[in-house]
Amino acid sequence: MLNSNSRFLATQYFKLAFVAVLALAFVAAQPSSTAQAKPKKAKYGTIKILTTPGGFPVSIDGKSYGETSLDYRAFDLDPGLHTVIIMLPNGQRWTREIDLPAGRIKCVALNYRPSPPPSKSPCPYPVNISAPVTVTEGEIITYTSDVSYSGDSTLNYTWSVSPASAHIVSGVGTPTITVDSTGLAGQTITATLIVDDGSGDETCRQSAQASTRVPPQEKRIIVGREFDTCCSCSYDDQKARLDNLAVELQNDPTTRTYIFAYGGRTSPVGQADRLLARARDYLVTQRGIDASRVTMENGGFREEDCVEVWIVPQGAPPPTPTPTVQPGDVRSSPAPGTKRRNRR
Image (cartoon, rainbow, N blue to C red; front, side, top):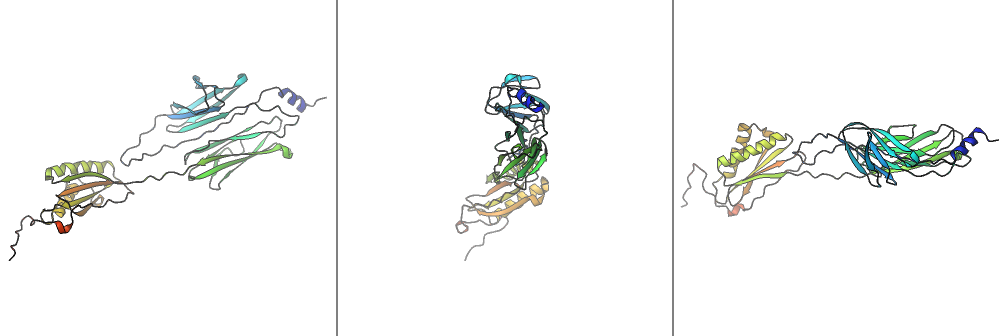
């Protein structure tokens, strides 16, 4: 006579089992790479879905979105709780409620395959873990296990992650955990799961691993930019250009300006210093720019009087002047208000 366990196994033998694996990942909004641009607040979030194999009908919040594919399909949705349903063969379906914040991405990776017919003993049993192959540093990684266990015992889930700097955010003791990838750029996070049914039978103790790569972040090179160059300009023209500079500095208080003045080949003696003093007085006194944000430098000589203006973001190296005329080639005229002495 069959015992209750044998009858249960016999009943389940002909039923199709499936393996469904969920991988969720959160993506933080990246700051803009341009120092002057103000970030825009995201108005929606994104759910990405793929299945292996593809071709399963998918609906979100009761609305049909066609079929899944082997590549991620992206769905931009309003922030909030959304119900995702994927229809599987034989009337089975996979469903999850996903809380979607604005500006974030959550990924669903679903693997489906029929399980092999169970043996008379529920052990050994297959254990699989699904997770994203790569994530951006700072994302939350979801590792989801799929255990095809046909026994009656309650399974124990024991997770561990490496490297040691990785830590589990949630899900300890459950089939699914989340791991924070913050600070782990350039490393691979590996989640290891041990599942047992408490019987002490070694064949009922199974393990699996899944790894996610966190690529190193590319270092953004911060440089200053030449904002304006004015040669042989009138004072009114120079003031108009300095007005534009003041607006730029006020729009981004983290920047500073470097101003180089060049005397011309035949300019009066001290012309570059006079141009610098005039520009500094206008910016600080007339336009109210903090003097600590303004760096003035005599750049030497060019063919004609020039004022060169740079805007430099925080952390960028300072620019350097670029004279084009050697001091020995300069034939300066007397400074205004002085007379040239005749040589005897």
